[in-house]
Length: 152
Image (cartoon, one colour):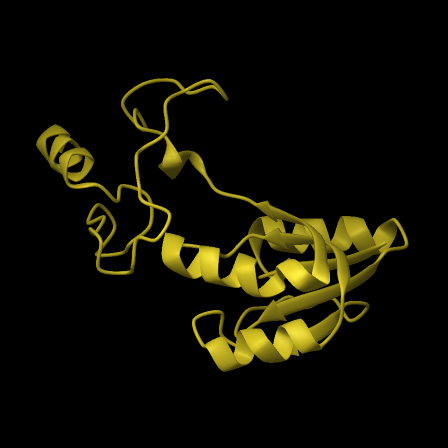
């Protein structure tokens, strides 16, 4: 099995890379190289997912049975990366967090919970999440952001 992990050196990405290596898979990671720890058994490809030339270089670096994307924050970028890797990957798995759910953190969640609406081509300036500082992660629609700030 040939696996590409976008991210792969921190949090859940590190766990995925380690489990794949332990299973005997050939693993490639794509990241900026700014986080530790790094698993020596993985083949690193350095680059920034927001730079189209880095994504093109990654696509040219091989083919994979599957891609696991643990580092997508902006829908337009995630879509562009998935499209660029489609010719060289069998499957593309995108991992998100509880921030995609409409009722987080006000209500308990399950896999059946409603998700927030966000256009698949939303760019970094779509809307910001300001709970922990301005980001484009999580609450990316104006009415959700407004509800969230009212709860604070």
